[in-house]
Length: 442
Image 1 (cartoon, one colour):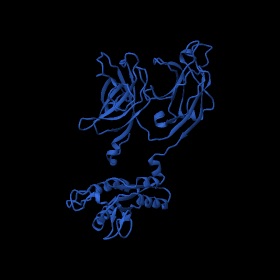
Image 2 (cartoon, helix red, strand yellow; image 1 turned 45 degrees about the vertical axis):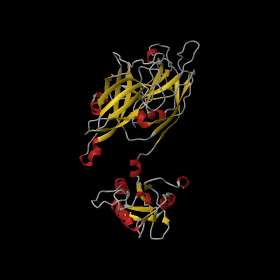
Image 3 (cartoon, one colour; image 1 turned 30 degrees about the horizontal axis):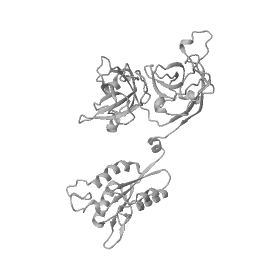
């Protein structure tokens, strides 16, 4: 990718997808085959490992091809140490304790991204049981296209598929989708459910993210393969057909399912046909699409002035204004969120509310008031901070903590705004909310 020198650190990173497969995994259970899944971790600066994500688990196989792609931010200027652990699933809990380890491999993300075809084959070591051979994990990486589009499709057999379970049985077919890589190899990216004992199955409607299926490219070659499921993981190949997302969208005839090994026979025509139904590409806009269409983001800020924050004159208070200029927690929250959102607001005017304070001696507690006497709107983040500090000098902290009045006011303001404005209400508070049911109703 082109790196623009004037765009700063963001230009030196991109999101990548990593796919996983393995071969030769050890059999760790006495009475069943391995049920593998992959966990990807990244090493932090302090040396600890943090989980990035994990794949789905597959049943009864020592040669898994995982369809779930794990997304990761690749930073060109950083050394990113990664660790792949393949587990044999022994329970359904999220905790990794209790699962047997098939093997572990470590790599640098830059090594994967710079490898030929962005693919690595790494030996696995350190399994639960000592073994001369723990298998090999295969990693395949690819920069991610920025799309949220989803392909909706239903696959069904238009004519009988091949019979693979002998004279008395029928096949238990399922479909896989494989996308082509730059080196010409195929990578599995999706799998349907199994339909038991049926040569003319109709699989459930599928909703497949376009990024997962074809990395956003509707013309990218895809290979759909049909298998007969076997409980011992020796799934029988029933044939395949090749097309693309565009081919699925434009299809008017069934696709012939072909077994290449049978094409040498003169009488061979196909091993059945598959038709696609209700095919639709659903466009789901990303943030950039909305911004190009003129979307603005308007931030409204609500600040908690209840007494539970502590007297502002004491250093222990969350509202303490440090004479050295250090930001208190309220100022830090306003600054960190506001600095990001103000660039998306064209007029840079922000409504600012206070709640939970008395505005003068003997006055009742106000649960929604302007932090400035002259009006709700202030200019920019600096204006929010100035208004907040001015309010601290003129109000008396009280309570209780009620959100409903300010949520109602913010919603009414949003309803009066022109179309094309997305409203964010930033509520900064210190403790328990005392009108939760009313908030839900609001």
